[in-house]
Amino acid sequence: MGDACCPPVQTGRRTALRRRIRLLVAATITYNVVEAVIALAAGTAANSTALIGFGLDSVIEVASAAAVAWQFAGRDPERRERTALKVIAVSFFALAAYVVVESALALLQAERPEHSTVGIVLAAVSLLVMPGLSYAQRKAGRELGSASAVADSKQTLLCTYLSAVLLVGLVVNSLFGWWWADPVAALVIAAVAVREGREAWRGHHCC
View 1 (spheres, helix red, strand yellow):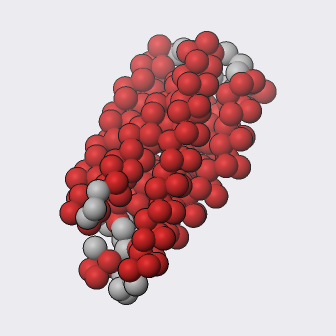
View 2 (view 1 turned 180 degrees about the vertical axis):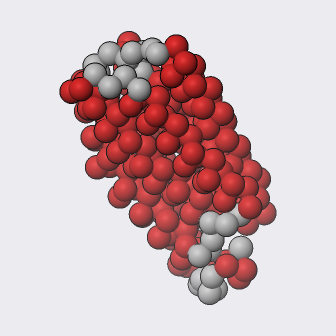
């Protein structure tokens, strides 16, 4: 892994990087579990496809981070990397499929989501928290030469994009009553998820 992607990393540094990635993955899982519970509850209450999609992304991000945690829990993480990448890719595709179907139904049925203060606050907080986590994991993953760690950092970065898209969709709906902004925002989420899923499947997340 390290030899194929990046310059060799000394044993001591490699051990420190693996430890850092495990800690970052643990922090990501913890935050996303909380985020998922809040987003799914608020999305169900407000009938918001984008907010529910955001919550499901958090669930999938937990699965993605768990795959990386499993990889680095072994003595030879390199041997587990390809499997971890497949899990991450499938998680992206699953999110995209669900969001596309729900968004299409919402547009066809003209479902009007309610205002969600909780959703707006959650999106704003995630917009502040996720970039830092993503950057730290991506930096460690690139130095170590771990495609799966970098892929998972992209999953976390996707959450930043989703937070911005979700925030715009919820605010526009609340201020102007543009109900269609919510499912359209969700479709943007799906498009980004498909792109990242393809990259993870191909293993294009290295240095």
